[in-house]
Length: 297
Image (cartoon, rainbow, N blue to C red; front, side, top):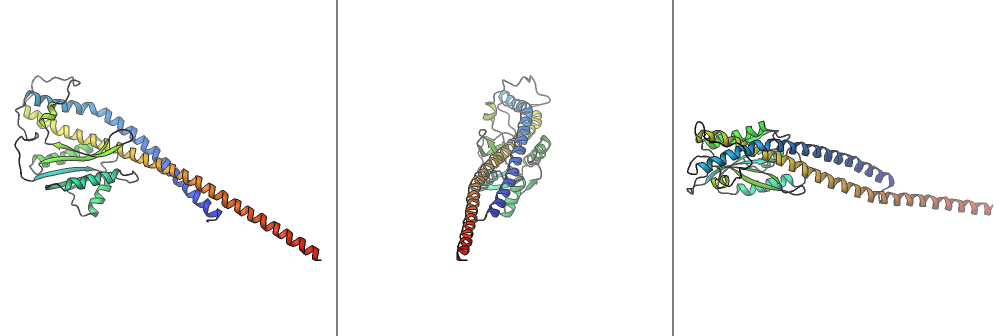
């Protein structure tokens, strides 16, 4: 059994670690509230854009465009682009592991797959496993904003317009509820006409009587902005899930630290009691020895 001094040193170390986990919990909580507020503030704008695309499809269902999914089946291998949103830091439970696992499953599909990595840990993982990365977006995960989202969307949409990509997907973390998150993959392009036609636009106040100069030109501007909105929403939601996962991980670490401190305190008390008992025994033994010595004299 360790001595009292060693136990005290260990307890001090755990207490210092507990201060760090508590601080990280509070920081993640503040970042989570800020990110959620930013997402709520920008949602109406992108909901309006999506409603515009939905109205075009409803009024012109026969309209053909590269941004819409073709009804003709093409059996040749697809060229896909995957925007993978990971974290820049660890200590967030299984957050990064779930994203990496889902990405590896997607890469098993037949065809050419290009990776667009957002987040340092994703870049490190795929680099270490010799999985080629087409483009990296540094510092786009922390404090996500619309400018960074547009940089990412402009990059992939330009490749899509040039015919270098047939499909664009984004892999991010979705918040099922306040306690549960899951890795998810969504297709950004091409859009499905049926899905757009089913969009509820009753809460969108603007009603378009005519499209100037043409519906095609409207689509050319609206759809890339919609993609940027999807990317921004995914970045913010992933950031919220990362902070939520880190909060839960730090809370679990703090609870474990408290449990360890409680057990160490009991062990320390036993060691201290044993040391006191040993000292008393030695004092009594010494007193008896002195008493016998006096009797001999």
